[in-house]
Length: 152
Image 1 (cartoon, helix red, strand yellow):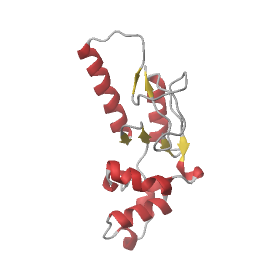
Image 2 (tube, rainbow, N blue to C red; image 1 turned 30 degrees about the horizontal axis):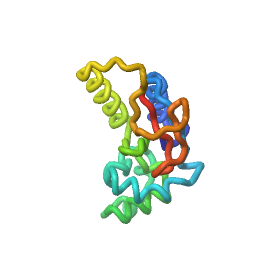
Image 3 (tube, rainbow, N blue to C red; image 1 turned 90 degrees about the vertical axis):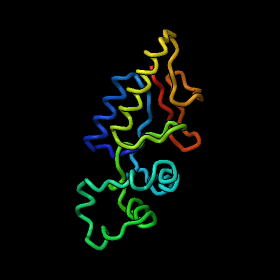
Image 4 (cartoon, helix red, strand yellow; image 1 turned 180 degrees about the horizontal axis):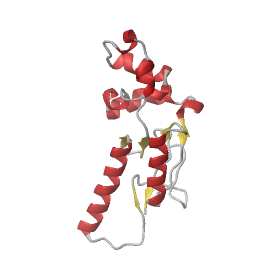
């Protein structure tokens, strides 16, 4: 899961995943400098409009010229230069890219509703990604360089 350590939404997402019993690896993309490397993939999978946080303080701090006529190329450049412009959190499960807390909570709600509907009672964990070599469900690395979350 990618984000910024001191972000309130990140804290909310981590608490939510912890309460769900979901293992994850947190990557602070501001400190690690990984945002620029992942932006083209994230934009292709989720759309640059979804990634660009236009409601945050960083967006308001930009000049009028920087905020004007934003297209994909400009948005990716801005997000690479100012990682705080990336909507948080970004959770890459390997199969899906979930952007924002609402996407994450909806994915878990849908999964839990499906489990109830299917009347499953197995003791194994449902995984957001089928490959996991760690006993706790995490796998650092992977096709998109992230940890895979595991649902319990």
